[in-house]
Length: 554
Figure 1 (cartoon, helix red, strand yellow):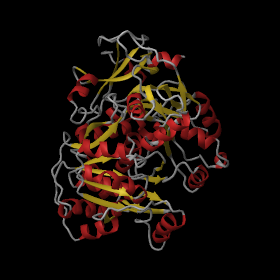
Figure 2 (cartoon, helix red, strand yellow):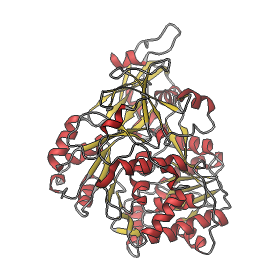
Figure 3 (cartoon, one colour):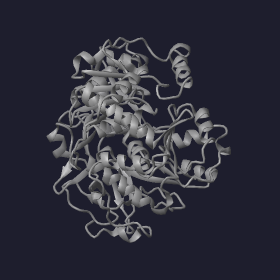
């Protein structure tokens, strides 16, 4: 697709390319916003806002603590394991300003998953939400982590609100299991100690590592996508250029319900609107949909991002149809395919379409977005965004003609540098010339719009989260009484896909309930199989490889 046919469909004012040299690093990007928008609210949670000025001060304290008290150096990895609370941007921007690398961790990880990520990344420090500290306690001795910081839900809320919030979570709702981390430092103490230190200036460039963002691995373990400062700056500038005059600097109110540890929300909400001086309304528990709708009614929001399951659940929540949508400019859907019935109903209720976008962790994430002024939902994942090339290729890597179905391949400044300490996986995923193989099958029409038709690899997509069958199978095969196991994705109205497990038993008394219970103990919730089917044998190739596609189609 070297002729870039998509450019003729670009909305007026959207440039063919962006200039990523506008910022030398994410550090420069966030610091310039802190100065420019000093008195404006940056992040709001549970009714309390941190201004860009507050963010400047608190991130400086946090960064100084990491450098001077924890003794960390440029490039060291710092894990952050928490939901959407005010401490998240303070920690992440503090880590970046101190010259270190953020390792985002899903707070719902099991001990097995957390241990892998901490060991693989070589993280030397972690800031963890106290509700999940018991998970860390089980594995910390097997990792390189030497500095543990613990925070509670109310730690950045004003007195007495913060104290009450912590008391309710700890004592009334009993949501903080007992844990023992003797050397852990409370977050408030971290800020107090950092206040008396000076944060050293660190010189960062676009090639420096900013985030190790973990994604499912075909080998059964997750692997860290190396996202540089340049990758993320490029994607923020690409997204900004794409939205054109729809977004207004210093005025946008952003609903952030998707977890910030996920690349979609991290870039599309946190980083982009920090650059634009927007106010991110952090939804800590988006599963509480009545509470979520109540929050929506408080703010004249201009932007909301979500996955299909989130939009669908909101539409089915009483009171959602009475929210004032008159200020809403963009509803951005990504992470998984948006279903047409959900998109149609969303437009009927809100008056605005869902703008479908496409990307991967490996592309920071945006690669294709539908035009910001689109009026209708087409099912397309959109056009390649500025400075991005899409090529549809066959198995040998040859470019296919317009309309032909092949693997979607991406090239652009937002494409990762590779997988952390996994040269073989990197080589397998990248073509010569900087092209990334997505594993998604699709086609491009004459106007340059891209459509996904299927997935080449066996990855299962549950509510926007990657689930790899090998990981499920590895866990299940460690269970007594199982001879063979295969995991596949099957359609699910609620989550797009769900995990189904096919098992050949050694123990005839083994039940589906036994298997699911074991999986719950060893896998994050969205990876747990919802269906288990027992078979006498599993279909295989002539070399003995299990045919997952045959099971999926059966």
